[in-house]
Image (cartoon, rainbow, N blue to C red; front, side):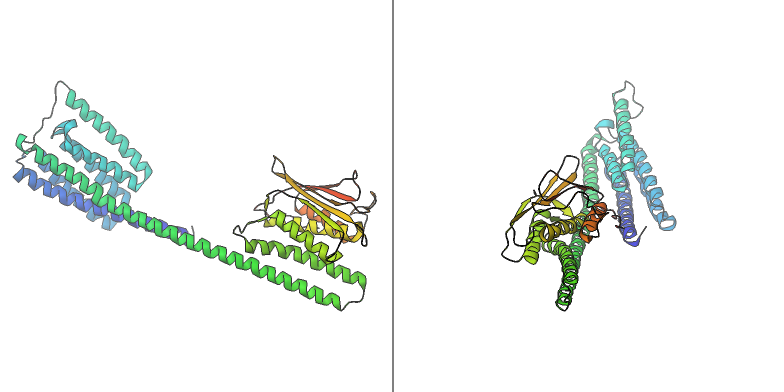
Length: 407
């Protein structure tokens, strides 16, 4: 168990122990006051005052012993059993089911639930059983106990019993539960601040990654200016476009509220338009048809899929739609009922023979497309029924797992 998890548990234990000790002291003091009140004010001479006296003394001893053994459950269960026994006896000798002191039994249930759910349930069932037994005794033809509270003192005894119950329930339990509520609110506020801080840091990371990738892109652009070989220059340009396609993902994550997913239509639109400007220039004859609904993909899926689209569109612009010819690039992304995605991407250019594949060609673009499909844990097929080059890619949204590294 780490330190962050252990600290709140220790605090909860301290709060629980503080509450139980505080209730013990209050009930002991009130019990001793009840002893003197019953004996000398209410003129109750039988059983009831001596139960208060015994409970007050024993509970004080029980509470003092906690300072030495530090066993909270032992202290709590001892006082609960004494309270059950004492309250049951006082209830029986002060009117049975009609005794106002019967409400003290409810306090034991409340204390149980404050401690743990299991103890609350246990003492709830015990109290229900005791109440049923008290009621059964009160309606029996022969009752072995009688109301020992004098007639003239019963109203005062009822008043003191109700005041005792209300004070303990509202004053002691209420204040501590309110204190616990404030602690929970503070914890919630602290967690929200940490989450906001974490989101800010994640945004900053995406921003820095985007800036670093743009720096790499700029270095590749500068390097290509000093190279006369057209083939090498094209390779550097292709690498630059791949870097930019990754930088766009981090830029979109930085600019949006959702730090885990990006709106993929706007990303594909921006990426495809950039590639057309980069390869064909600002005034081209290329028509872009993008059909993507409101889909959001996480970064583990968005980056390899973006690189795949980058390669397919780049190949279409370089080798499919040649020179200044008119052409159309179509990108469609859908999601089926099984949470599988289907990408249809292609162009109406010149295409290439069926015999050419990533296994038989030296084209880095084709090899990358197939390796990226493997990284997406999907499948790819060519659609030969249409003019040009068209791919059908099936994949699932990769989530919380490490994608396999292409070989």
